[in-house]
Image (tube, rainbow, N blue to C red):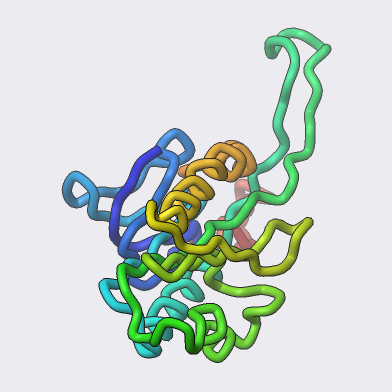
Length: 220
């Protein structure tokens, strides 16, 4: 796995807002890097994004939600069928339709917060700013050091879960462990994305029906 910072782009050329941390799988598709870690990352190779805040307040939360929304609006490619079994010369090969690829998981990490301890919680504030927080939140994991870790469950558990704080900062450990434990499953769901989809523009092609007549245009 790789870690970088920059912009996430889909195969149609749509780009996300600037992203603090991108966790990606370079074996799926390689990013376009300007230096060791900064660049443009193909959506089909991205697994998690992390927005990092030194101090979380309502304004910074709103910015994080908009950034996450720009990720969720990108179009994931079709993983295509997967062929298993023998070699290309063997008839025992089986083509299996790939399930729908798992989406990038936008997350938020903050070192502190402006909320008073014992008053409004971070998840309560999040509900105020994301109208879909209860059933389809754009940010799926929120960790605030010293306050807790909230995550939206899997499709089998469509609700928020909470990991409380501890002297050893278990909320941070749980946040990082949840990311690490999910990397392989998300990566495997992507199938074999094609870099060519990022290079071919959606322009019409010329159809040749008769070599002696002008070609006819049709869609991509």
